[in-house]
Structure formats: C-alpha cells, structure tokens
Amino acid sequence: MGQSCCPGTAVHCVAEADIAVEACEAHQEEFASLSGPCDTRRFPLSDSGSSSIASSVDEFALRGWKLVQPVTLVVRSLGGEEVFRDATGCFHMPVEQLIKSVCATIGADPDRVNLFSGATLLQTGTRLGESLDPPSTGSIEITLVRVPGPPVTVTARSGRPIQVLDTVPTIGSFCHFDRNYVFRDLGGFANLPNTRYILTSNEDRKMPAHAVMWTLKFRVPATVHINFRSDRHEARVASWLKKDGWTRSNIHSTLSTGIPHGPYSGPVFSKRVDDGVLELKGSNFHEGTYFVFVEFPYEL
Image (tube, rainbow, N blue to C red; front, side, top):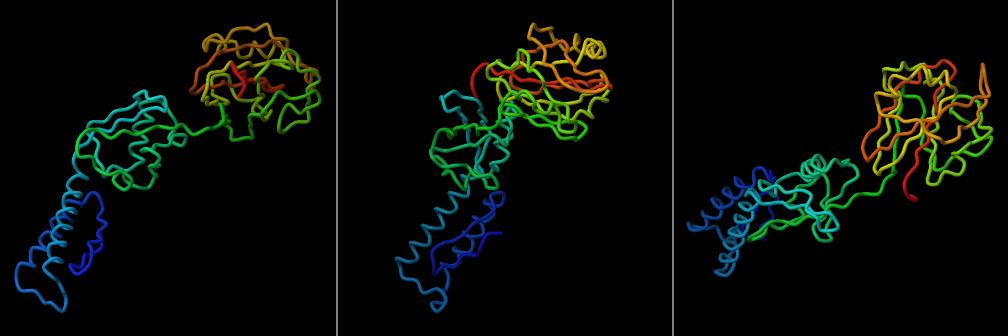
C-alpha cells in the first residue's frame, strides 16, 4: 500500500499501480470529511490551504485514473522504423513485460535491449508510469536501443569448456582446452579475414551424430566452417551434413597433431547463417572433434 497522506501537508502517496484507482477513491473520501467539523489542532488549515488540498487530491485522482487507462505504446528503432505497437498498453505495465513483448516480436534477446523515452532509460524493476507522464492525447513514443554484445556466443551440451576466440589461432596454438594437440598449419584459415576460432573440449568427440553437441547464437550474419580431421571423420557424420544443408568448401584444411593417427588433415564444410541459433551435431568420432571457424562478412 502507499503511504497515508496528512491533510495538513502536501500529498505524498506512492500507490502500487494495480491499486491506483482504489487509493485515489480512499483519498477522496478522506478529504471529503473536511467539509464537516475540523479539529484545527490536527488540521491547521486556512481557506487557501483547504483549496490547495482539494486541488492536490483532484490532481492525484486524475493521475491515478490515467495510470490504468489503455494507451497506445509505439516502439521505434533508432532509425525511426516502427518495430512494435500495443494499443492496449497502460502505465502500470512493468517495463520487463514491455521489453519481453518487444523482443518476442523482433526476435531479440531481452538482455540485449534497452527502452528509452527521450533521454530517459525505462528501468527494469519499475513500471512505465514511474518514468513516463500519461499524455493528454495520442500515443507514447519509445525508442529501442540494442545493447552491444558479442557477435556470436557458444555453449556445449556436455557443459565442458568452450570459447569463441577473437582471432584464428597461430601455428603452435592448442586446438582444444583438454588436449595438448597443436596446429602445425592453419591452411586456408590463416589468411581468411574477419574469422574467429571456437576453442572446444576434445572429449566432446563421443557425442553421437543425432544429438546436438554445440549451440551457436548469432547476433549478425556469418559463415560457419567445420574442418574434419580426415575423410573417415566426415563419413561418420555424413547424414547430418546433408540434412542440415552443409556444402563442401575449397578452403584448404588445417594440419594438427593428435593420436592415434596424427597429424590430421581433412575436408572443410561451410554453411551461411543469419542471426539466430545454429546447432552443431555430434562429432561421433573417437579420434577427436571437428574444428569450427566463424567468418563474418565485415570487421567487428
């Protein structure tokens, strides 16, 4: 509940939005009693003071009424394009609820989106009415700002360590978190611009071909290259390569150490992806996982 208001002072009431109307009615009843006998020791009012209080009550009641009235919320990108509209919004709506609705419409991550009214950030954990004044007419214009983040993130179904590196490894760099295998040659990836390597755990090699092994989440378009250790390795996953739309590339393979049949070199397959999720299926090969490189169309 909001704080009680003393008629001898300014009105200070912070009502929860979902009881705003009830709070307003309660205050109106409280102040209406002033028309009867008044204890001046408790309510030391002048004629002007009584008028001021009545005005404050009317203003509070009007604002409380406006908080629960439907209002059209229009969300635009920084470029001015309308990306979301809700004609049934209201000012007691939690900011998080609006963010989730917007992100569900545009396919964005709620953790990567901020909403502004002019220069005012709409803070999560609050309601719209705490940052915005109800308009007399028209809609409320809100601006969507995407928070900068990594162009791609990755997780392993196994929970083992996995990380997107900022660049392509150099000769002598480790291929995995959990092995001392190294790259002897980066092949065609050495000079491939705007490319990053995904450092993985080789123990994920046992993941069956029908299961998702790694999940990549993209914020921008990219081309993903997977480099197998050998032709034998490719044959173990041929079913999902074809089904998931991978095509053989002419990029020259890396050369890496390893057991039992290293050094290893094998075919490269590629796939173009837009922003969103890409699932990489199981390596299904006891000699190791495939290597993953991500190429972006521009410098990030």
